[in-house]
Image (cartoon, rainbow, N blue to C red; front, top):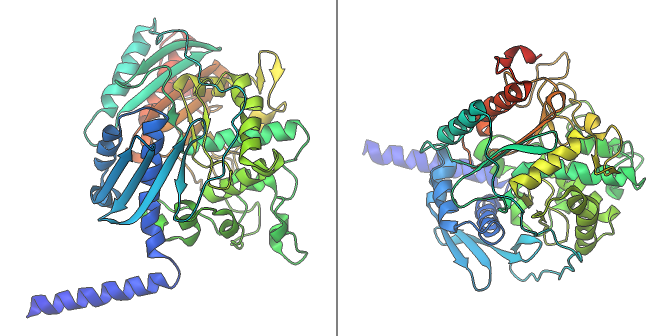
Length: 473
């Protein structure tokens, strides 16, 4: 009898909690974030990266915590004939993504048809001319061994690719089985740094200014405090909008987050968000504000999926030499600027070198002078700049927020980071770019292991192999 009573109480409490949650969120949308995200990611890795989907699914299922347990209840359907991937949870809450050559995968919704997109005249899918570069440094070789070994533990997904470039020349490179110099790898939030570059190009051309009020008509009423939000606020994630991201599965219950994978066009919902603080006074990580920024980029580049693709290829990917870049879009033709770029490890190294060289490639200015310094300047009390993370906290009265500082790495280092352990580190004082692409569920996405590799690269190019801990700070 006692067991029955306890069970009844549990059911009531659970029902009450669900009923309360339903007042402010959509549980079906929360679950469709999971199926939508998985359908999309498996689609991209299957048809763009050409990775065996069984490997992707198996790696996802080794994740710990609630997400890993939910994933074990998911079912997947990879249709190679129609180039689609479906995902569902216990046969319900299904989502489907479709691959379109040149522009990657897009989620499709019931009753929706995707608008055809004219691709740029020249694509970047050109084979690399050389095999992986073996390092000549015994110390760096050992560091690569340690990196791949440390990441291969059962609960820690493996490193897929590493490229270390010094002064524009590859000095070390290694790939996991199934990956190589031509394999495009999903970026996750490294895409935010690509959005930074596209904004920079528009600034270079005088199309926008980071000091401009964000061109969102809904915010421009004289009595609307959101009219003070600038493009720079969106880049720095200090807009003050109620679009924060939380850590872990609780993010699925946030209505604003639910728009990202549960409806065709999240933009109208995102721009309805009110302020929780004055613009420029509070930092909070937010992919949604980067998606707003992506819509601004699309509109400034011509307003269509075709025009923004042409802009990205013509002005960024082709000049930089990103041979295998794919810029994914949502159903409206807006780039998935918060997470949707694929490129090879060498492509990402070339992208990092663009910033290392203050926005210049082969004598041609791609980004405005000083753009790299602007991007790497910390925001408020966070170690986040404008689309890039920094390896130092800004001096501020409030406690520092953001990611851990990498020990043993020069404090002028800044980096792009994706949630599954994708990193591009730029070390201006050592003329280094280090790319690390993994599928990590380690703490802080494996930044500790990545930082040790960066420190080893710094010691190698210094030529003395000393402990570089005193370089930090």
